Image (tube, rainbow, N blue to C red):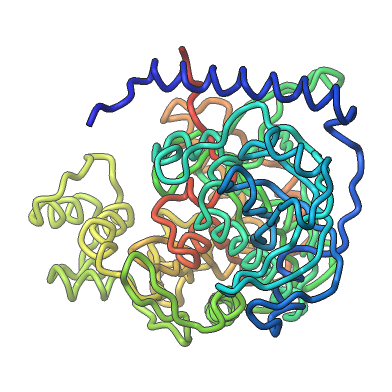
Length: 500
């Protein structure tokens, strides 16, 4: 069997487009407007299926309906067509015994991918297929390019990401996945509102970037003549809301932008839920996360259990809690709490045959050992607690252990899904830590990094004690929809410009 070359595919596509162009010309001559501004349908395909679920085989309903959608398949020279809309498909039957001559003449001008409207009688065939016997057919959109072949046209994963509209047309799995995403985001918003949180909107353009350690996207505002940065996190603005007293519980479902690497779990722009709860701490946030995960799974799947890449995962809380130093000690035998200095920590990690940079601090070494030796084993949801202060500049210290902070990350399928703190609200300590961050950034060559003095002034007015959290919506949706890559759950993921 010979395989078609790309050149052959292009030639076939060009031939098909030429034929479609000729049909468009004939349609304009015969019916006039081929792209009408409006078409009144009386019922959607899913509504039709529900309304006539009890219609027996080989039965005419006597009811006339008007449906519309895209033609996905055609058999017997168009006598049978499958018409798809957002709710599903319906079979269209066009025959001289029931259709007018204009409808019969239309059949030869219809191609796969065209959008048509059909008025006719509902029946169920002898084989049990719900069908509309066409009386009239209206061309609503003449597609000038052919659809991809159902089984071969969008097997190229790169094409699926670049031409998501075709991916959704051709692949029911992709369509279901994005419907699942919408359900998950709606579920999260309803959950937060039910828990008493107030949704707000904070700026996407920041004069000073902060709230996370990440490389920003830069832009320039012409009228103000100032450089600005796309948001890497909404944290510092949401904390200003807590200072204001507008609400004790605030959240935002936000788009963040980080000018960093792309992978199966990273996209330059991504969606986060970020929330702050006054007079709560990281323990309270663990309970909130558990309830949110369970509710999202219930709303998407009807159960708190889901299957991801063949692995059954339970979102039924409570989740286990695992202190990072103790977890590392159990797996490696190294008790980092018994190690005092940075150099001794580096030496202990090197004894595990890990590559350790000479500049790494005690906390950075502890976190690195955890990442290398434990992360991959965390399949069921678990809260990893007691992070090093070295890598947690906005969290409160653990009483009696100043090297650790009241922070947790929720892991599932070895991924970090959630990050949460008992938020630092001591303005003097906050200033000290932010200055340290800037000094370290400048040492790395990040000379644009500055202290956010406006935020520190707000903190000087007093922010109540609070728990804060951020949840990666995209990664959570990946789990909920069994998607192996973040690009499978983002409608239009970032892609490098394709060159000829």
